Figure 1 (cartoon, rainbow, N blue to C red):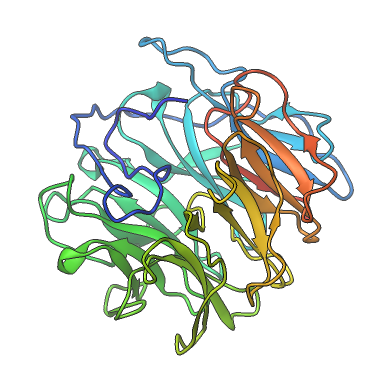
Figure 2: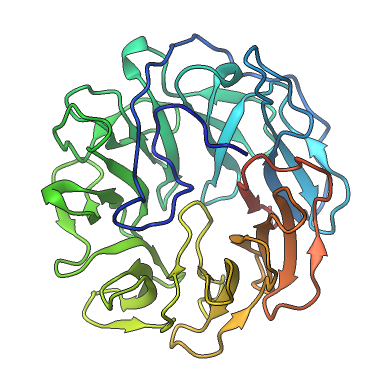
Amino acid sequence: MSTPHRSFPDHRRSPTLAGALRWVLIPVVFLACDDSVSPGPDPVDGPRNEILFISTLQGSVNEFGRTLSDIFDINADGTARRRLTAHSNDYYFLSLSPDRSRLAFYANEGGVGCFNVRVSDVEVREVTQVTGLAPDERCNVSPYWSPDGHRIGFTSSRNPDFGWDAYVMNPDGTGVVNVSRNPSVDLATSHDRVVGWTPDGRIVVHTNREGREGTYLMSADGSQDEPFMADNVFLYPRWSPDGTRIVATSDRDGNWEVYVITADRSEVMNVTLDPEYDHIPLGSRTPWSPDGSRIAFQSTRSGNTDVFVVSPDGSGIVNVSNDPGRDMFMDWSPDGSRILFASDRYGDTELFIADADGTHLVSLTRIPSETSWPYAIWVSGR
C-alpha cells in the first residue's frame, strides 16, 4: 500500500530521530459522514478464536482510483473470513478496549478529507464517528484505550495554535482535553503524539518539545507532565502485564536497541545487543507475551526485517518469522503460544501465524491485496 497523501502522523515509519515523524501539511476537505453499517452476520455462539484485520479485498474504488478498505475477521486457522463493515473507507489502526468488547480506529469518508476516530463493538455492527463532527476539529488519529476503558487518548490537529497535540476524550467523543499543549502553528515540525497509556492512567506521548525527540508521561487532565527518562531518548514504552517492567526502544548505546526498564525507571538493561536495527514496532499491540515471560521485537540482524522474541533478561532470542521478506509483528495469541505477524514475502502484505519458537507457520491470508496496511489484532477470548 502506498503512503496516504494526507496530513496525519505516519505510524509506519521507523523510530529514528531523523525520520520517525516527517509529517507534511496538505489542504484537506471536511465532509459530514454517517459511518453506520447494516447488521452483519449473527455472532457465533461459544468461544471465539479470531483475528480482526483491515483489507482492501472487497473495497470500493473512490473517484481518484484509490481502493478503499474494510474490516474483516477470520478464524485463527484461516477459515470463515467475514467482512464486518458494509461501508468501505480508509480504515486504520485497530485498537481493542481492555474488556475486548469495543474497537477504536480512524478512517476518512470515501478516502477523502481528514481522518477521524470511530468507535464500534467488536462485531462492527454499528460504527459511531466520535471526532470531526465540527469543521474546526481538523484531523484526529491514533486512538488508544485507557487501562480502565473509560477514556481514549488520541492525536489531533484541531487547535491551530498547537499543531499535532495529544488529547483524551470519553468513548462517545465528549469531554475532550488537550493534555500536551505544545504551542506551534507548524504541523510539519510540532508533534505531540499519543502512543499509549501507563498502568496508572497517564498518557504516553511521543514529542519533539525542547528541541529533541523523546517520550513524556502526561496526566489525563493535562495538569502535569514529566519526561519518561530524563537522560536518554526512549521511545514507545510498553508496560509488562504485571506492571513491574517496561520495554522501550532507545539509541542510548549508539544504535537502536530494545531495553527492559524497571517500573521505577531505576534499572535499564539492553536485551537485544546487536549492531543492527532492533526496535519495538509502534502500530502493533503490546510486545509483551500475556504472561510477561517474552518480548516480541523487530530486527534487521538477519539481513532483512524479521520478528524475534527474547526473554526480559536478554536470553533465548528466537527468529520467529525467518524469511527474506519484510516481516512485522502484530500481536500475541491470548495464550502466548503463537505470534501474529504481517509479511510481504509473497509480493503483497499478508498475515501469518507461527508458534513463538518459529515453528508451525500458518499462512492466514493468501489472496492478493488481502491487507491494505497490516493492522491486525487477535480478539479471541471473548
